[in-house]
Image (cartoon, rainbow over all chains, first blue to last red; front, side, top):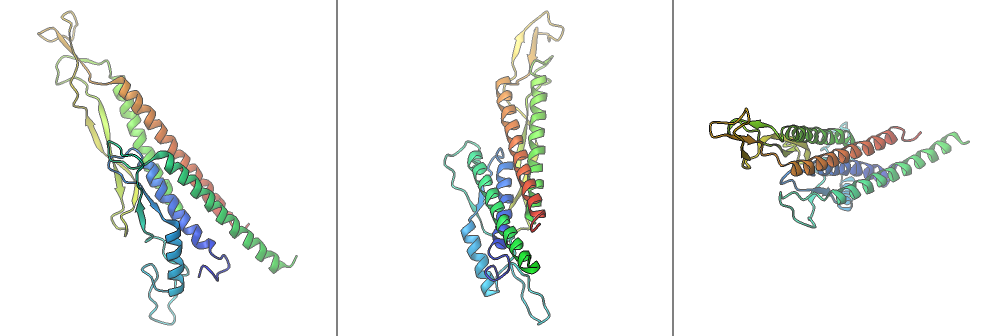
Length: 135
Length: 137
């Protein structure tokens, strides 16, 4: 679906980005928790997976269609994106692997890219509206 | 929409850091408390953080911070020989708290920085959500 829908790839990208925001927020919130291991989403792998599930129509996140009147979800579920553990640059005494600076940078980067996807969608919608109205 | 759960995650972080600041202020306020016996002496209190895991999700994602409890420091209590002090015991000794003020100050700065970080995360998520709400306008 991502390739032939109106919004293109950006719909999926937006969903993965918002999921990643949550994961990074959990890292930052747990910056002082002993034994906490920082996690992250591999955006490229998640994107590939989403596209694959869209073309094959079968994935853990999609629903089985056993009747011709069943409605297929338009986008794959984002809840089963694989989370990876971060490799710490430096070990700490309390076994916490959160690097606050790194997480901050990742969070900011993610927020910016989220906004970029939003902008692309906005442009797409504006273009379509112009085409519909014809003015 | 998972952006909304950022508020839950960061909110739990805020409350955990607030509790930490609370224990720091309690410790600093009682840094010079004097008591009659070693048993009654004020001992520095420290919160224990733990991750809050969503057990029902496929990859055990973390949904915030929880405070497991507050432990009292096991450091030795400082005692002084002051026979003229009204709180002195039969041996003329008074017992101070085991609060390390420098440690507490460092703790306070760390808690306040973490609090700010969580606020920052919430602010950015709020902006993203507001932008998403006006999508296509």
